[in-house]
Each structure stands twice: as structure tokens, then as C-alpha cells.
Length: 99
Image 1 (cartoon, rainbow, N blue to C red):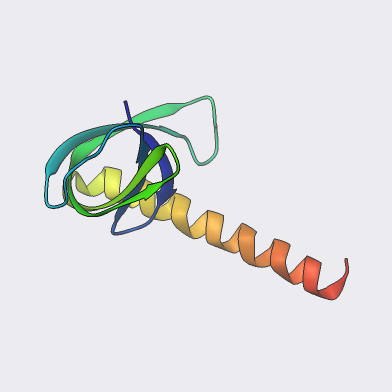
Image 2: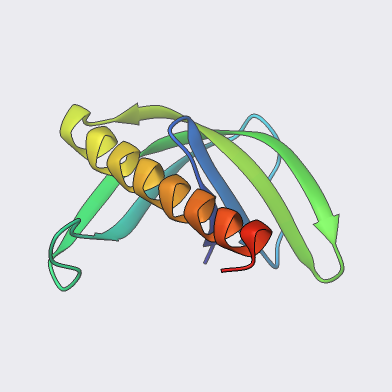
């Protein structure tokens, strides 16, 4: 079992307790909440190709780039990434300005 720790338009960051060789092609399935209704879950499936592996303590972190993902599922992921970036920028601005 892998856990997603990072998400971007181009791929995923994963964490595992076992090693995953670089350049492996993996099938992935994510449960992505709806943009307007978080209770509405969409299954996002596709394949990624792992690009690197880093050991951090007892865990293995690996990055993977999308190889296949349906167009509408990629758009849902991209919309979430954009939303999360906007939220992070607002939070950082508030911290920097002391709000």
C-alpha cells in the first residue's frame, strides 16, 4: 500500500515502507473529493512511471510522472492542484503580513 504525499499536474509523490525501483510503471487509483462537494468522490486511475526513490527513516519516498490518465480525470487533478496552490499562497501572504 502506498500513500500519496504530494500531487501535481505532472505526477505524484508517494510514501511506502517498501522500496519501489525507479523507472517502474505502476497502476494507481486515487479517491479524489469533488471540487464543490467533498462527499462526492471520483476515482482517478492511471499509470505512473517512477522517477526517483529516497529513503527517509523507515519510509521510502518516490516520485512518479503520469503515463496514462483520462483527460477528464487529469483536469480534476489539475483543478485541485490550482485550488490548493491558491490556498497556500493566501495562507503565506496572511502569515507574512501578520493577518
